[in-house]
Image 1 (cartoon, helix red, strand yellow):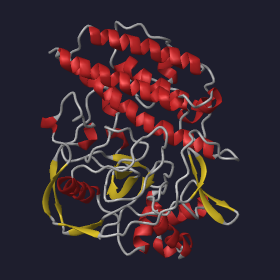
Image 2: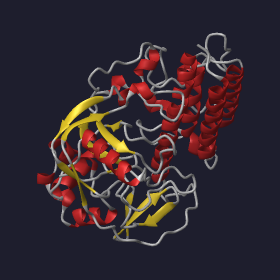
Image 3: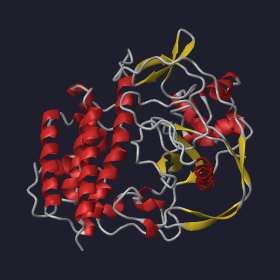
Image 4: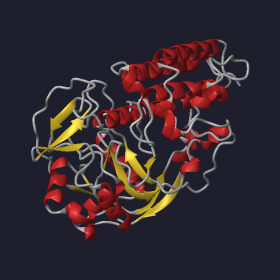
Length: 418
């Protein structure tokens, strides 16, 4: 079945908007910035620009399309085993050729082919893959920001990418507790509402199902920088009794004594941001902490991390009472959390106590595209909400982000439950 003209126009506009934002994020970066790779888990900006383009080339354009360069299928495949072999992830920073101008031409070539395809009409299946590609690119926009921040933080002088104005220090908002009634609750995405619009969901967000929750309370705001300083002052990073065994091993092995990107400058804590090194702002949500750190803080504070289902149910209650409040989402002139407030979406992703596992009845899609989420459902923890690097419109209450427990380069924080 072909897609209606109005839906095609909306999809074309979305494709154009998403592709333009990636280029806007890359624009302040030099060729050298875009090529280097700071650690195996991160990827060069140039690679993100190319891989998101490869996704459309591989899954949307079809067999009649003439590839821009046959070697790109090897260079810019990420983890799709069904597609074929790929360049080793830890060596992406060694791919000096193609250069950033070649990647620009590649993106323009594929964009033109996609718009030509849109002009000829799309089947619903192809349209669904094109929509998936735009959301996939939004994921990589956040990864691009994470990865370039990590790279530049390894520079001796902490260079800035943007010129965010200085902001005065503000203390934490008061913390209150919201009571949430237990019982049976529906969680996850209702597939019957899916469509080629803003109601898109990734496959790991469903099927919708019931969970039983006990009565609980959840904090009215995220844990802040000010809260975290108290944890540090009380020896939080020096007390093994607060930590899971693997977490304490990470503290010892990696030398953690503060969140990532906090710099000790003449015995004063400063924070590295995309606008350079700045003083801490006490009322911001603490950011760039691992699951292990979040769990240790919760234990120290006399609380715990919410499960992902508690988080979702609580967030839905907030939206029913207050509309859909949002914290800081991606602003290319800022890329930094705002102040912690009563919203549950925005500023920082929030670690939950839940392992990343399939929902009851989950089944990956057939073919290579089915490798998108399901194959990673092991040794990962779920984060909920969104962050200051999440593009607006990409956030939603059922979104399941996930990272290994020791990861800190995501814009990750926490919220207490009890």
